[in-house]
Image 1 (cartoon, rainbow, N blue to C red):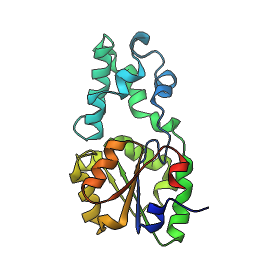
Image 2 (cartoon, rainbow, N blue to C red):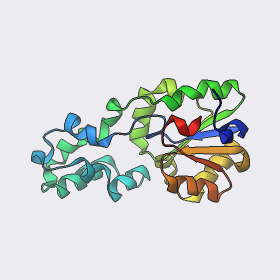
Image 3 (cartoon, one colour):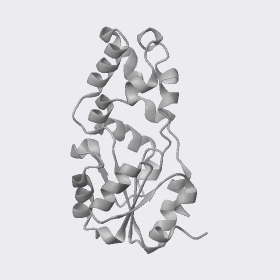
Amino acid sequence: MALNILIENAKNVVFDVGCVLLAWEPEKYLPVLAPGAVNGKLTWDMLYCTPMWDRLDEGMVREEEVARHAARRAGDESLWHQVMPAVQRFPELMRVLPAAELIPRLHEMGKKVYVLSNYGFDSFARTEKRFSAVFSQMDGMVISGREKICKPDPRVYRILLERYGLSPAETVFIDDRPVNIEGARSVGMQGIVYTGMDALL
C-alpha cells in the first residue's frame, strides 16, 4: 500500500506522540485513576485541558503543582494527593495506535524516524519506559519538557533539525493539531495533519 506522497518523498519522518503514535484519551483517565478526586468535583478537563498542564508539558512546573492547581479548582487544594494518580499514571492507560506500525517500514525504505512532542519531563520518562518497543525504534527525539519549549514555537522545530542535522525540505512532520503543522511549515518542513491512517496512505 502506497504512502502519502509527502512521506514517500521525505528522507526524514517526524511523529507527534499523543493521538498519533499513542492514544491520548484524557476523558478516560480520571474516572479510572482518581475516581474520588476532591470528592468527585474534579472533571477531566479541569486537569488536562488547562494552561497549567501546558506548563507541565513545557517543563516549567512540577507534577505536584499541577495536582494542587486542579484540586484548588475543584474546591479543596489540601486534597491534591487524590489527583496525583491521574497526573502520574495516565501512561498506564495509553495504547499504541496504527501509525506506529509504519516505523519499521519507513526504516526499510531508508528513512530516518523521529519524535517531536509536547510532553512533560517525568510523564514522558514513564511513557517511554512503558512503550519502549515503539520509542527504541526512533533515530532521535525532542520532547518539550526536556527542552522547555513547546510546539508550535518555531524554536523547538529548529532544535530537532539542528540536533540531528536534518534538512527541513526533506523532513515531514505528522501531528494531529493544525497549529503544530503550521509551526513546522514556518521553518520549512513539510507537514501532514493526522486525522487517522488515511492521512498517511
